[in-house]
Length: 157
Image (cartoon, rainbow, N blue to C red; front, top):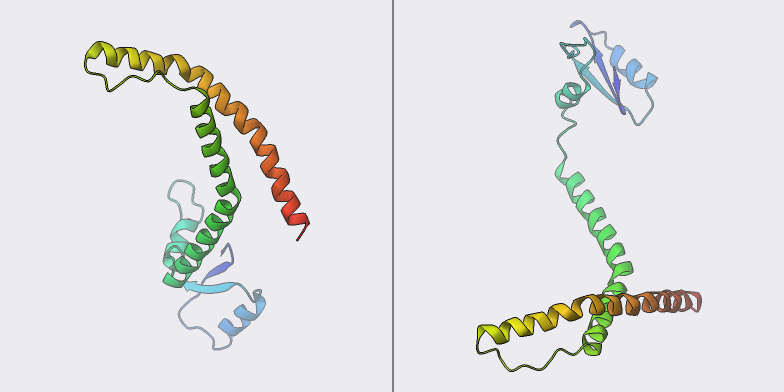
């Protein structure tokens, strides 16, 4: 049975000396050869259970060096993504700060009673839709500018 890049074969106990080298020569060089006692079958369908075959061959367990390699690749991919999205953080923060400056809230001193606290929160709630629209509009013109600046810096290198 061939499962991925591994071949699982069932052989009777008296093995001829040249059988395994002949089987290995018949397989492509990147294939693994596993000799098993029997092929596990699914009781409902009678088909070969490939998951159990992989467990028999120890292929489901990741080796520590394979895990380290995968972790290194994941970190490299995260660094690449951060390289692209880190400038967007600055654009977003700048847009939010600019929107916050454009909509100053009424300057209440620290609310001393519940009524003053309610008035302050109503004042904030009144500005939320226009604050969001202002921040969105600010981001809408900053993103194309950032894109063209990045393209220009790459082109001039």
